Image (cartoon, rainbow over all chains, first blue to last red; front, side, top):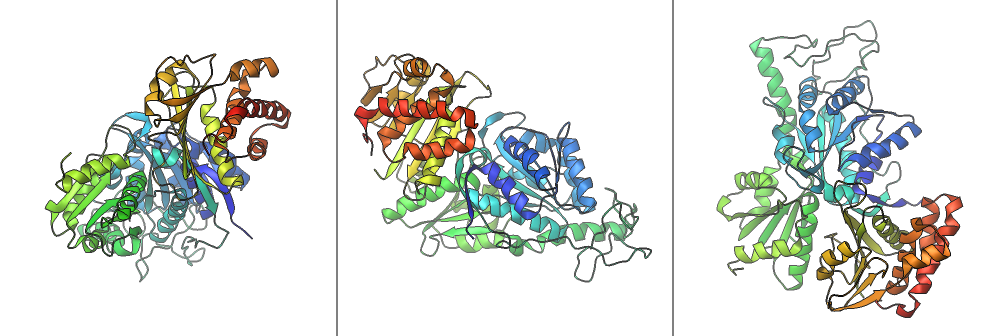
Length: 382
Length: 184
């Protein structure tokens, strides 16, 4: 058998990945530049036996997928910045109740309604801290359609493995551009299925009592077990509590299950790092321009390298620190005012050597944009 | 040519983005080439200026936008005025005398093709205007065969409209005969 080859938008690569991963329920409200995901799944998902609902807004969209996930289904929604803002309350609820779900945010220019048809990468910190209160979150990104497909599958796998919402941060440029996608054969990429409880009908099931390995087996809501689910701090039964010990235990659990696995969750790509004197750190559409620059400058013998991050949260600080040791400079390439920049500065030994190469006017950062900034950093003037 | 950098410009509703998508898809699925297509557009569905970029190459394409096209198609005066300055000096500029007055002294091989007149005379339906333009582009770039474009059209267009599209494609292809492989 050979892989099916398609020529598609990044948004279509995302929905193909979701279908491959076993998506069963999608609720969404169309918004540029993510609408092709919703539109495509309206057609494709019912055809494979799944459920598609167009909701009245983004608040109901995220609430619908959380409910559907609780009943035992793989779920997703997709939106852009303004819709992602509305989803934060539901997202926090999913974090607290540990309900697996995938939220795609195809970033456009913000804040507010901003630039609907232009790109940006300004939602990186919103993905991390849009939800109030201490919490941890997983956010992935990608720079090519093949990677969009694979990262979408990864998002589902991580959501199911760790009972957590996973955010897929795409951007307008990747979402709308078209390039080749090869759809892997079934079985080529591993898929994680939900861990379900082995507790029988008629026997007490504790929805929030972790096993020895820390995992929480789920029981399909509406099935054989009756249990409570709340956004309040809760005990092993799922009932509200303000017992300081339990509160402390739960917040530690929510934090540790992600933050103790930073290196396990880290997905990244390395280009020409071995002998690099200067290193770029980038992600999403910006990483394509950065790699273009790296490959072009290598032809001239300049020792540039690229670390492309695919996991943004939890931030792979140790990996970034390790790869940046001893470099003359570190250049963070992103389309915002420096959101990952500060994470990189925190991670490395010499934060003064970290520079920002950015563009925030709604236009895609170009290789010439980066060349200009590189010249300045190298002391060559404008 | 190692890399074909093409930009199609016009006004919303003329089908320039669709034409770009079909061309790039043909290159990837039927010619064994690498291609990337992207577009710039405003919030309006019709009207306003639209731009579609296509890069066709034999090797990996990273940055997907075209900064300096070797071939620019402009189907309105506004699109022409807005975009001719980005054309690579000596590049090819395709326009239609029905819509564009190429008065400017531009360092380009200016190719004016009466595509609109041709489509209206031969077919009578402006809806296939963009496919006619695609036929002309295919002849000039010489790396994508019209039969391959038809294969893509067959997957996108209802059977009843295929003949009309084929006719438009051939019309454009024939019209550009004097410029065959100008860019290859």
